[in-house]
Amino acid sequence: MGPFQILLLLFFCFALNLPFYGLQNRNIASNSNGNIKTAFWLGLMGPMGMLICLIQNIKPTWRKILFGFGRFFLWAIGSQIIVELGLFSQGFVNAFILYFFGFPFIMRGKNIYRFKVKKQ
Image 1 (cartoon, one colour):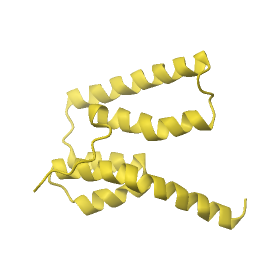
Image 2: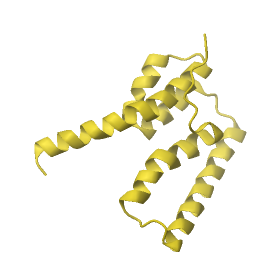
Image 3: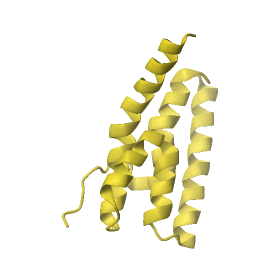
């Protein structure tokens, strides 16, 4: 793979990450009166940026932590059942679904696709 393909792949990944994770991070920051611009640009980092945004803006409680672990175990069991049934393979499709559905579900729960910003 040449340098042009690597740059194209990085650009494609950033182009997908910024609107998806950036808007979710912006929603998290606006709900806790955090810095919206910084949170939006953390979207370039994908799930790691969302984790940083959650750490900066949300006060952790035992209930939230336990719900996160519960959602992780639910996702792990569900994805294993889907692979065992043969609906998806272990390859690219499963990784794509994990990246754009699994990580946000594990970290945000029912607010997985809430992009609306709270009025200041």
